[in-house]
Image (cartoon, rainbow, N blue to C red; front, side, top):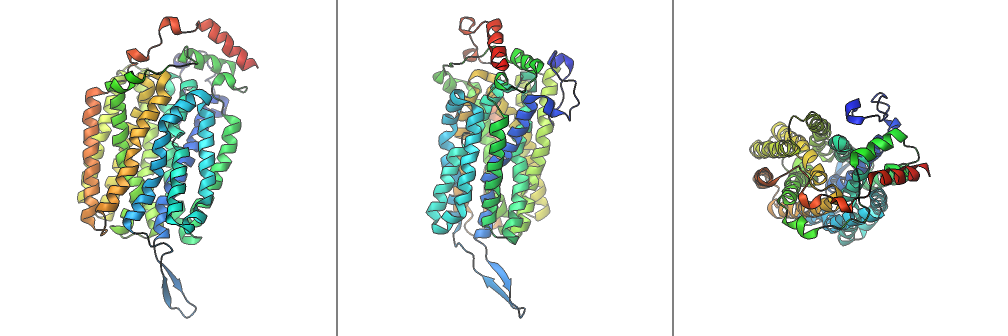
Length: 481
């Protein structure tokens, strides 16, 4: 839900249109397209989690005389090989986080975001062919996909730096990022249906085509900033520019300050903590459903989507609630971020532990759904926290944070592959214990060092800024062109 601003929040912006007429405000168009973009980011990421279950499972064929004949799996990969495949995406993903933030600041986050998804979609279409050639080709193409999708989150922070007014930042970003979870909700069960009824290659063909169609629309509709958008209303342009203030075109990043700042490390640790639990489940949950809860590929696909349906819904509440509290000055930004992030981690730690003890279909699914769903409050906090503490450097900081945040995607599937060798319930319990401990550590660290205030090293000194009247004039000229 994109929401609607009051006159006090928006000044003389064109905000009197009903909320459902979101197309009358371009920043909402950008947010909706970003939402659909992140849908594709995760569709292209998680399809393999369900696909690999079908690729490594035997099937039954009924002959004309009624005899059931078991056909062996097309691929006989063991758990270690499956863990390597599931983690290979993140070997590529981790390499372009920082590069993505740096490139976005120079060529435009809108362009980089679109190109990354387009190239990943093309390689997804090639996946069935290369997987049948060799497991090594399958791993290689997943690494390449990770490289191109690694720019997604850092490049989007460059888009927010140009499009998102501070008092709308949480709600706009939350709605956009909820596309990740919507993608997971739709793709996991749909992948199970496609694999069961058509065959596992359809899992890759369908979502590869969808990604390319989205790219065509994104390239036409979304510009780097409002001053380059010919369709934006002049009042909305003024509102966005006035709320964001001055900006720097040639930003000099204080790298030493980045790595010696407690608030930066707090955001990074929160990023890693949330990603550990999230990426553990997003890559391993279908296998857990099959090994421990004894579901088939289609059932595993549907039930694996439940936690992400919960977080897709909760994320809307978290973003709107954060902005509502801030707009009414009920709490400081720092306190809002700490309450949302630390509170979520403590709850997630608790439900992960309960899931480890309640290894029954209803108990495990309920606890994991609550654990992932409550993670929305942490996600809505640490993703925008980079914008809170250093708006001019947010895309690069998110790149750094996501570099560390990608490590769970590499380490967790590998650890699972080594621990869960016999597919026993007690082996999966260890995986949940590890996730619980990391959530608790994240809550403690962010509680001590987290901040929501612009850091002293991130403030633009007066002599480095451009006169606001001059900037406004330049922006209006660009818009008129």
